[in-house]
Structures are given as C-alpha cells and as structure tokens.
Amino acid sequence: MGVEKDVVLWNTMLSALAQHGRGEEAIHMVDEMICSGVKPNRITLIVLLHACSHSGLVQEHYACLIDLLGRAGDFDNLINQLQKLPCEPNQQILSALLGVCAIHGNMELGSTAAERLMKLEPQSPASYVLLSSIHATLGKWESAEQFRELMEKRHVKKEQGISWIEQQNNLQTFTVSEQLAGQEEEELPSSPIAGR
Image 1 (cartoon, rainbow, N blue to C red):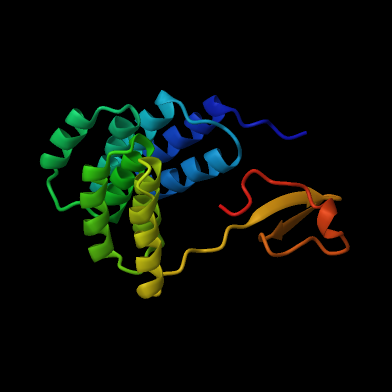
Image 2: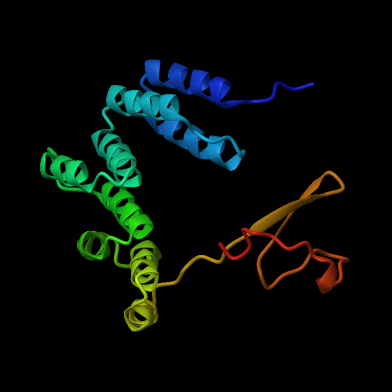
C-alpha cells in the first residue's frame, strides 16, 4: 500500500529540493501537489521561496511574493515590492500580478500588467482572458467583449480545456466536444472543471 501524500510530506520533499538548489523542480512539484488535491500552506510558500532563492530564480521568487501579497489584498505592499524589483518584471511576475488583480477586480493595476504582458507575449491568451475577466467582474461587459474580440483579431487562441475521469482503472481524457468511447452523451459525468 502506498503512502498518502499530505501537506507535511509534500513540504518535506520540497524542502529537500530547496536545500539542494533545485528550484525549478520545486516549482513543478508545487504544481503537482495542487493537481493531486493537496492545498499548499504557509510552510509550502516559505519552502518554495527558499528553493527559488537558493537556485538564483529571482524572478520566480518575486512572482511568489507578488502572488502572496495580492491574494491577501495587500496592494500597498505589493506595489512597494514591485518598485523595489532589481530587474524588469518578467512574464511570471506580470502573470502573478494580473491574476491577483483579476481576483480582487483591480482594473487599473490589472490593465497596466496586461499591457506589459501583451508586449512580452503577444500570442499568449492569459493576459487577454484575465483582463476580460476583470472587466466582466466589474460589470463592464462591453469592455470584456472587446478583449475577446481583440484576441480573435490578433489570432490569439486559448487552449481547449481537458477533463479526465478514471474508468475501469484507465484514465480517460476528453474535451467539451468529445465523449468517452462507448458511452452515450447523456451518460457522461458532469465535471466542474470541464472547459477550463
């Protein structure tokens, strides 16, 4: 019987990576942790920051900090940290900033982050989608639609969401428009993550 990975075990594995300067692997491990259904805690964040700093991943370190402050709604501290950056914000930092602006509906800061992100990665759908989401959250439906139209005009494509289900010990993946082999459409389970 395998050992169930709880947050303590994940944090221990992350700590080992951090001590050996393997920051990139630590970042991927946190993604794996979240996908497995384990919610990171404050220790996870501290260990991840430690891993980034020991690996020279300055940009990722700041992206974590921006995400932390933004999720807490501490935009004064967040802006202060942005002004102290030793380098220009990269895609990770701007994505983290845009993400927290979308959560809190901070349109002014979100718009600035999105514009800079669009210049760095003009074909990435994230900035368009998140900026559209900020406008929609604030009830600015026309503006939200304009960003979707801008995506089409610039031929920016959003990746299609994939859902998965285990069926008879086999992992089956499908998109919104697909169905499991041998299953009638109405028998497919509804998934809260379909289309993401």
